[in-house]
Amino acid sequence: MHNPYTVSVYPIQQEPGLWFATYMIAEYRNGAERIVANVAMRHDTHRSEARARQSARRAGERAAARLRLQ
Image (cartoon, rainbow, N blue to C red):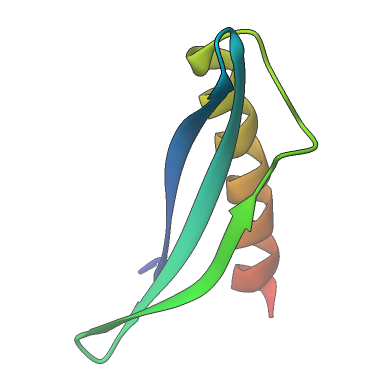
C-alpha cells in the first residue's frame, strides 16, 4: 500500500542545553507535495537534541497515522 504521508523532524536549540523539536507532515499526491501540518513542540523540552528529535518523531508519526485513517 502506498503511503502518501511523510514526517520530517527538526530539533531546535532554544538555549544551551534545552531543546525542542518541530515536525512537518507532507502529503504527496498526483506528483505534488502539500504540507498538511507544521507543528512546533515548544511545550515539550529536552536536555538533548536526540531526545527532542525522538519525541517529535513519535508525535509526528502518530499524527500521520491518524491522517492515514481518514
